[in-house]
Length: 75
Image 1: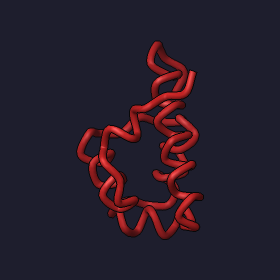
Image 2 (image 1 turned 180 degrees about the vertical axis):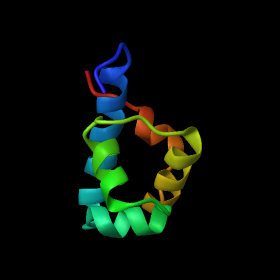
Image 3 (image 1 turned 180 degrees about the horizontal axis):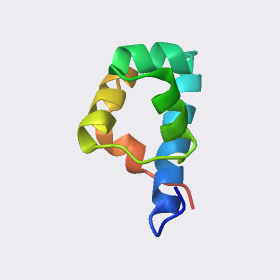
C-alpha cells in the first residue's frame, strides 16, 4: 500500500508491533484476540494494507491500551 497516507499507516503498524512485543504476544495471539486473521495482522503491522477504524479499536482493546496510543508517533 504505497499511497499518500503510507507514513501514517506505517506509524500505526509500528505502534501495534511495539505494544504487542512489549506484552510478549505473537501476531497470531493478537490476531485471535482482535478477531482477525494472522495474515491481516501482519499486513497491518507492515503497512501493506490499511484497515477500518473498527479493526483498530479491536486491536487496541486486545492490547489493553487506549486507541489514541496507536496514533502517537515518534518524531
